[in-house]
Image 1 (cartoon, one colour):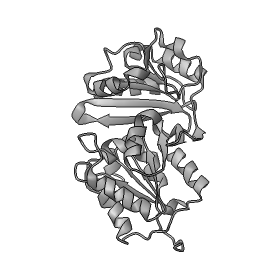
Image 2 (cartoon, rainbow, N blue to C red):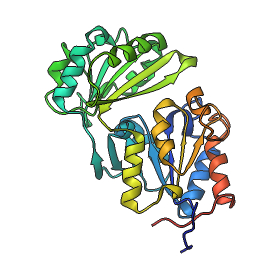
Image 3 (cartoon, rainbow, N blue to C red):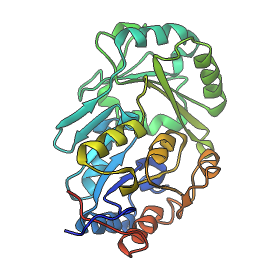
Image 4 (cartoon, rainbow, N blue to C red):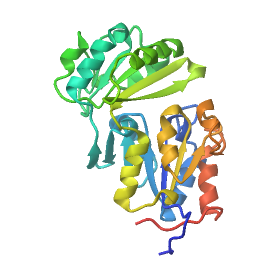
Amino acid sequence: MVTSSKGSIRLLATDIDGTLLNPQFQISEGDLAALRQAHAAGIEIVLVTGRRHTFALPIAKQLGFDLWLISSNGAVTRSLASETFHRDLMPAETCRQLCRAMQEFRGNTVLTFDSESKGAIVLERLDEIGPSIRRWVEKNMEFIEFVVPIEKAVVRDPVQTMFCGTMARMNEALRALDAAGMDGKITVLRTEYPARDLSMVDVLNAGCSKGHALERWAAHRGYQRDEVMAIGDNHNDVEMLEFAGHPVIMGNACEELRGRGWRVTRGNDDCGVAAAVEEIVSGQWPVVSGQ
């Protein structure tokens, strides 16, 4: 066991889409090898994603070692073996109030529930979701149920309410959320892919984010902030990067992240995760074995 020192990295948290996955939605061999090397060196790896746990599992399993997943932008923390550490669900009444306030966006609304069966994802219709998210719809079809009106599906606390659509349409949704009078009840996070004209606005329980979930997990494992590295690329990664003592952003990161003075690695098309990890294992950052 190496003695811990200030700045030692014991926990590595990485986003999935736009970060660990390359533009072909695959883990590059270089990134895969680097994460396996970090794990072998005793660094704990945790995947932190906006995806549902079930949708993130196939990615996590490719790594080839046991790890935990923080999914749905921090709402669920669960192991590969489905052991749950924490859930932060949205109260059903808050969800119903939100749906009423966002009537204009019924065609963009998606509810997700913490289950692995049909009804885990609920929509009223698909016509306004947009072609850029069709791949996600196709891969999740076994979990999708159509309910009109969508509030009828809210018979238990959902994980989140998501609004999907074009960049312009989701900017309208963000303005509507600002005017909804729900401050203190919800957290609003966004993920944008301008090249695909795709934006997702995730609405979660108040205080729920990747950053809060990562902070909770680090405390549980006994890690200090300066022992945590986080890697991300999008708006919904901000809180996670703010918590980490060693924030790293991808070369393809959005402008909001670029303006914060955080360390920049290569893009997701050039093994940016591997480049960041190699700085740890090469000794540019001190390393201590995980617990």
